[in-house]
Image (cartoon, rainbow, N blue to C red; front, side, top):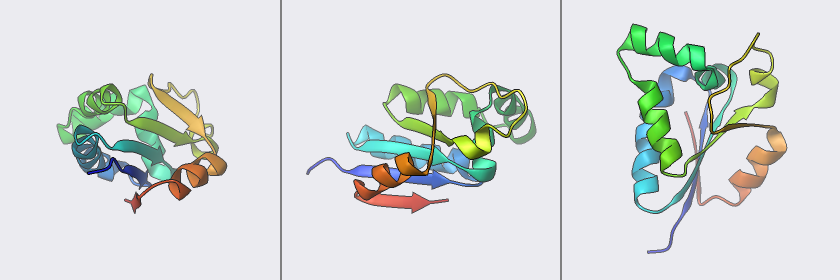
Length: 115
């Protein structure tokens, strides 16, 4: 079976754990996976937010994110949303991107999933 390209678009931070688990499953099957974080979803790219998420929801989001990065999953944060945050501490491995990057990646994907 040929490798596929999956793009996940996450606009709600509460959906991130679910998306990461699905993305990891796709990456384990040797598929190329990218995740774009926009709106509220972009908050998870801030190191400080990861600590809050763990305390309030008992989710080790940082561990899931590191597993995803280790599997080669690409993280993109919308530069318009991420730059608004005051004093953002961007996690290692994440890139800031704009609409053009998202569209280019989405047009080349076999599936684009929005959460």
